[in-house]
Structure formats: C-alpha cells, structure tokens
Image 1: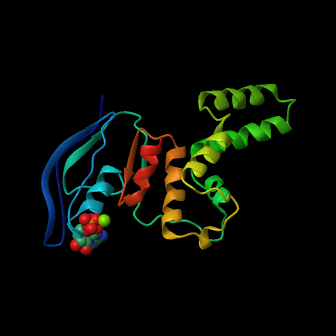
Image 2: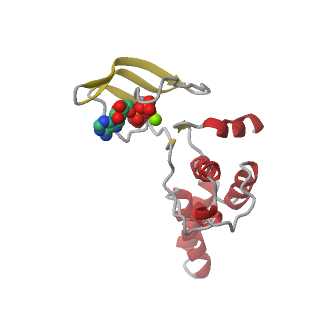
Length: 188
Ligand SMILES: Nc1ncnc2c1ncn2[C@@H]1O[C@H](COP(=O)(O)OP(=O)(O)O)[C@@H](O)[C@H]1O
Ligand SMILES: [Mg+2]
C-alpha cells in the first residue's frame, strides 16, 4: 500500500540549492533512513514530507486519511509540566474524546449525548488510553510520571515527545535525528 509519493521536489534557500527533482515513494511497512552530512537538507526534506513546509517545485501526494506524526529534532515541551501532564497537554484528538465522555458521565440524564460520547470512545479505541500511555512511557524508560520536564535530560525529553507521537497511532512516523530512540522499535 502506497502511503505517499514524492514527485520531482526541489528546495532552495536563496542561491543555495538543497536538492533538485527528488522522487521516491513510501509504502506501508517500510523503514527509510535519510543519511547525509549536516547542513545538506535532511530536516528541510522531512519538513516538506511532514507537510510543515512547501517544496519549490513538485508535489507530495499523501494517501487519503494518512496519519502522520512528526518528531522534530528539538521537541518543544513545556518545562513546567510533569511527564504525565505533557501527555494530557498534547494535541492528540483522543484527549477531547475522553474529556467529552467524562462530561457525559457527569450528566447521565442526557442519554443521547452519553451514547454519542460512548460510541466515540469505542470508535477511537479510547478506553485503554491510560494503559497505553503508561505502557509506552514505561518502555521508553520514563517511569516517573511526576518528574518535571525541566529536569529531564535531552534524551528523556526526546523520548517523551516520541511517546506523544506514538500515542496518536500514526500510520507514518517521521523522526528527525532519532539517534538512540530507535531502540524502542527493536524492543517492540
Ligand atoms: N528557513 C531557512 N532559511 C534559510 N536557510 C535555511 C532555512 N532552513 C534551513 N536552511 C539552510 O538549509 C541548509 C540545510 O538545512 P537542514 O535542512 O537543516 O539540513 P540538515 O538537517 O541536513 O542538517 C542549511 O544550510 C541551512 O542553513
Ligand atoms: Mg537536521
């Protein structure tokens, strides 16, 4: 199954040409690495594939409904939050579904709203979200849910951002400079 097709894309900054007319495809199940010296355009290419930037020429065609998660080289996390609060502060759509369900339980007389919220929980496999985030954090060696992000090491922060990315259950996970976080996928 084809996830996305990159067709003849080029990118320049001013006079500096990073790449010209690159084409390739990404299919389900593939693990692809871009290897190049610093400053040659890896991040720029990933930003285009992730949909955060536009190519100067060409197109990136995504499979309809494809869910992409992007783990940037320097994740932007709030240092004042704890590990667990960071999970609940993310923009994962499942959080809204859980919140709606919790409101619905508080107003049991409105059975239609309750049923809708219940069905959404089913449809998005939201019932086991708590188990899943705890499992993922544990596997990523972030066992202390109450540790402050500001006190985490660079590697721990990156693993926390990876946890948030994985919790969106993406079809395609894009990681910039993943380094040792690849261990997670061997453990899985
Ligand atoms: N927004 C930008 N404006 C101008 N130049 C940029 C911008 N982003 C990246 N560059 C330049 O493009 C080149 C490639 O950067 P980047 O894609 O970050 O490379 P890599 O990730 O391979 O280290 C660098 O020389 C960088 O300075
Ligand atoms: Mg880079």
